[in-house]
Image 1 (cartoon, rainbow, N blue to C red):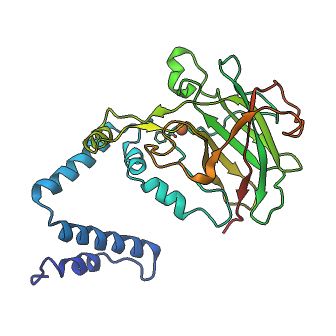
Image 2 (cartoon, rainbow, N blue to C red):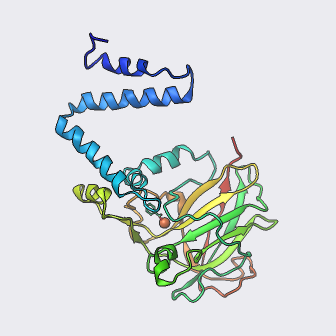
Length: 287
Ligand code: BEZ
Ligand code: FE
């Protein structure tokens, strides 16, 4: 490997790995080496620039904790998370969007029609619709796992030291025999992603803000179907066209309307809402 130069180096590095022929690992690793070397040649990267990137990644690692994963945030603000979501959305299924850092396993099971808002101020909104197979049939017994920020843009999990229950404003619902889900809640407000670390510096260097458009999070699970992680946004709300993590898709923007019991199908609800928002989810079969 003595006669190596900036052009033959790439093959030499790829060949140094004895990876299984035809394996996915080989494909991913070699693709990464190709793109990284191409980028470096194209940009004619200087030592200073190369070290700046490595220091940035080091700083991302340094500030990360089990609760704060700066690399995921980096992926989010670079649109990488959104790209992975887009690539992995199956035709006809509800488009995927950010999981975000506030998902909790084992959220409380709630009965259809339950209220998540409790004592919170603000208009009570009925969130309702169906979960269907891409072929159209309603999915009975599908799990609708939802979590959200409150009317001031805060997740209760962020306010535990102020006595909030981390499982508040979340619930796991099971669709009925018509594939329906329904519950009441308050609408969340926009909030900021953390900007006190290296990703914040990157946003500032690019004159970008750190606000997310207000959203509800969902994870949908059903037997034989691909789990779908997505978010719903609201028409005409702030940051809908410049969400800091590129989570918004046109198909995920819902319309909030005044509540009309008969229009919503006279659903049995724990509390009478002021407004309603309908969204029909579509899940693709596994595979
Ligand atoms: C969220 O949606 O909760 C979120 C997404 C990305 C970064 C921070 C928060
Ligand atoms: Fe969120």
